[in-house]
Length: 308
Length: 307
Image (cartoon, rainbow over all chains, first blue to last red):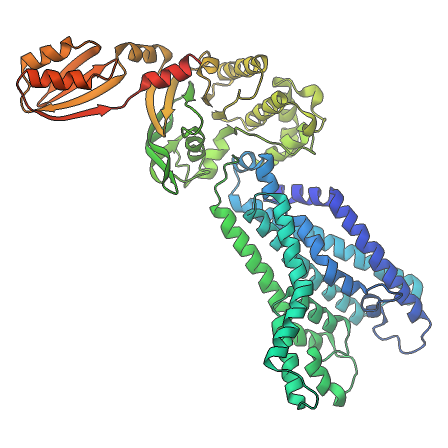
């Protein structure tokens, strides 16, 4: 399997589309972190967790790094996966590779692992560059708690991008044409990043409509229904999970929790407690990724491999 | 020793019979030509031999292994050149071969020498570092052969190795195949729809039509079959009399008549069923059954032997 892994990894890291997306994210992330650091370096308040602000604060019209990853990250995952299998069919390399003494699942496992590794390298190096930029601009090193939170953020991001990678691979198995699988992946991306938010609002309005003078618990119900629908989306799961990781003061999820929070102190939580809050979201993300990959795996193992 | 031993091989795709009761035997050290029109089941048969497709029914042994359950062992000893072969276009010839070598777990150092050796053998050594995307069809085919040789196979399967290649290129490839058999003592299976092109190199050929092997043997044996007859009939009568047999033998186009109990087997060059039934009536016995094995080898022969 390692042969497949190294070849695919080399292909990813050398491919033009990977390099283009890598620099796009680096530029946007770096610029927003630079602006955030500039506004932060003026403040003389407690420097607790100031590094995390580099990732969560947007500035000068730019989205935060976190927001950028949650919105555009899926595209990177998808572009690494959408032609993984069908392009091999179209090129006629499938029968050649699979007639070598390898098990068929080594091939798809190797491809998936190589994709995940490429994503890991990309995210980790961009985050490190941004942290280094922060070090240069802020003038003091990040604390241990910050480093562990940033590392956790990298891990969650890789899982999130891994979901989109496995979705891309799934479509590359289902559809014979690379264009079709790319479009299908983009359709799912748009659905989860845009339409599901509208849909969630609509469903909540239907079940618990908010009218002037309505009781607060109806309002809470409205919000929890909205959250419930949104949690089917990996985008929302990722946003919730990383918000709790990168904003240590964050205690609850959703507006319903925020309403209750007025009476709660806003001191930062230790990492363990933050993780505890978002544990369901993390498990959900990992589960979505695994399910997606499992489906691809099963379909691929049953696929007839004739190239004509 | 038999390299390939297949009995009653069947493969149905959603009810379509791609291979329908195929028996195949390939002996060690021979070049066997599997001939048939497109869609006759050649590629499906090959995929079954390699364990890339599971047969619906039947038994196969390749080099003594069952390709479905011991696919890795079969694939380690078997080299396969697929019909529409493709390479990674953005890698050079050498890099493509290096990848295949690593999939075969050939150690890096050993692989380097071997790659050079096979590239020289197929005459691609001077373009080894060019991207495969720039190669012509014939060059890709030769690179495919180099790749097959890389793992020192005992058995080589070439699926349509000459299709889409100009006659000169095809000749080169066929010469290479004969040389390999002599130098490396490999058993080779060539599938093709162009008999006139590959008959020169084959020791034995099998003609496959609609998923069945309709004829098998050396070219000499096959032509002998052609001489004898192409239509086979089975006749069942109430009583086999000498008069009947004499009348049957007298029919124009009948090559041989064999009686066994109440059945008579008739081989003929033409469809002689009307004459046969008339002969039965004239000799005063009852006709119980007349079955024609539509064994239209002639049709196949005409289409492939004289194209």
